[in-house]
Image (cartoon, rainbow, N blue to C red; front, side, top):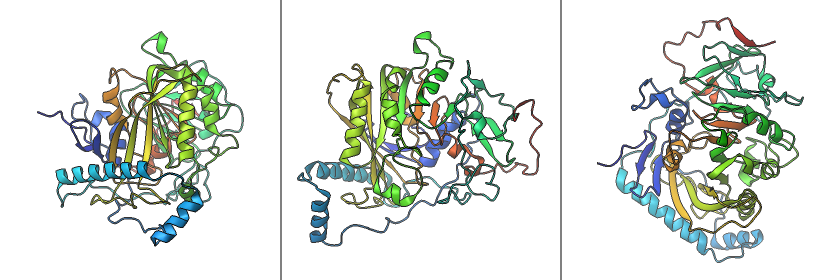
Amino acid sequence: MPPQLHPSILYQNPAQTLALLDIPTSISHAQHPTTLPSSPTSHPLPTLLSSPAPRHPYPSTEPKTPTARAAVLRRLGANDDGRESREREAELRAGLEEIRGFLGEGREWCLPRVVGMGRGRGKKKRKLGRGDDGEEPVLELSERASVLLERPLLLTGLGKDIFADSKQFTGRLIHNPHPHPAPIHLASSAAQTYTIPPGATFFHSSITPLTTPHFTTSIQTLPSTSPTTSGKFNFILLDPPWKNRSVRRSHNYETAGYGQEADPMTALNDMLAQHMAPHALVAIWITNTARVRASALESFQAWGVSLVEEWTWVKTTIHGAPVTELDGIWRKPYECLLLGRKIGEEGGEVPVVALRKRIIVGVPDLHSRKPSLKALVEPTMQDPREYRALEIFARNLTAGWCAWGDEVLRFNWEGHWAKPRNNDENAPLAESALSFAG
């Protein structure tokens, strides 16, 4: 009998090189693992609110004729014969056809969604405490230097953890030590509540040469099963804010410095290797440009990491059609994840190994909301129950993982989740026995 698939995996081939993943479900289960049937304390799965699943491909922005396409390629300086691109497109088409053969023509490529949320972020960011009208709040960073603590701040898990505003936990390691979610409240607005998954840790800050020492010092204090793994991780995932045309056009998040002058990858290149456990797996999302790929591989070399796998996330409609042309120039319907293994020494030569390729297919959700990779990564860990993971530039938390960045709580805001039916919206916040408001 084939092994039971994770609820977010709708299809996976025996070689585990092709998977169909439901994005909202992957995030929900990653934040609430006690909802799995195998959990001894199973609870109903909270519902992550989503955007409508696309039924048709996006309108094309590609050149209309072969002559126009050739002119664009010349202008962009394309100097290869396109063989590598054609090979990738053929692999992706074959993967899509395999899934279609499994599902059949009538079945949708994602699970039913609950659509609806606040208006999201406008071009002008709104400060925390002004989200009462349903607009997604933006957590502000403290302008002062972080105050280093000797140990992480542990949440009570009783609904009594209250901060005056987000500046009070900027640059502070916050940990939920409990086997259940722990809400935190912002006193500046009673409507702003964030749910911290069980075992999750976060460090809310920008990523600069000034903040990286704070993270390094703070993470050393996080409890570990072994003194030799203190401050080190078996899996590190990065989603850097690379510059690209579509992101600049969408105005959805800052690029070229993560909202600041300096490139955050420069700061990480100088310090991240010290947080990698022996043979750690390191994964980094990249855009579809040679420049970004080269930059990511330079970071791998700086960390002593050897490229071992490449995953391609293909975005499709609910009927399995790519959302844009596979051979598009301006907008590809896929993103790539480079995975490397910590083998060599920092800055030295790293061994070249045979590259394994995997394809992840998923119907896209909100802009900038990527699938949670927890269900796909955990089986690759030496001990899936005892590993340490760090997500950098995270936009949400994951149970048992550590997250670092200036948007770590974005999709943990209560406005991104459906309210339970028995939720009393008029109930006041419990009086705090542990308050950080003053």
